[in-house]
Length: 334
Image 1 (spheres, rainbow, N blue to C red):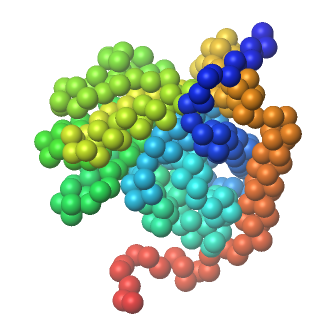
Image 2: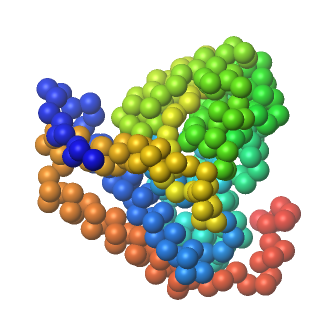
């Protein structure tokens, strides 16, 4: 494989250096966090299912950077990357994966149900497509209350053939709701290639049937994702109704940790890994003179420390007590 060619510095950087470095740091944090989660799963420290976001980091980081703090996010069960990109506490995220009481959902949600209302992060959902009607409902609430708040709804290509997909888009269009529907098309619904189950090659055009404008973008380039999402967010926030983005990306691991990935060709995997979003962005920053070797080593050290501390925090945290089983079932009086 040929080495990446250095990027020449443009006359003007596309974004301030601080923001570019933040993008790189967040993507690297997601990668290292997920790699550590895989290790902890293999050691039996994480139970249940574990769906890793490795390879898709540019999507979460680029899109969430285009939001305001009050904007809602709802997503699917491969949501660790979204939570970290939203600057949720890595300690509490890891604790949730460990099933500890200090986790984001008190240790009762696990990998697929991260939640942090303080950051308007209203959950990962394990039911395929199940987050879409919730996003439409949140959009309706924001519209009814006259709030300056949009909802960003992530879903995978496996959700587009569900009834909720069409119901959510239809109602969002009818009511002109402030919802940005964001398809993370990683090419596979579990172990099935998307072109075997979807009759439409350009999935984003589904939205056009309901009068919703759409766009397909490169999900392996964080700057492309950021700019496209920023434009879409501005349109939705201006009152023009919902928008639909489809980002083409790729998960470097299987559907879950239990997936041996026997359905993919090695050549296909290598082709996508050659476009690793973190490596590509690092090469670009180095070529622009934004990221020196010393700065790169410093970022890597900080990220590794954050991940190591998250594991220590999770290991040292208590498990939920038996009485927690009956908590949060009903509204409690203050």
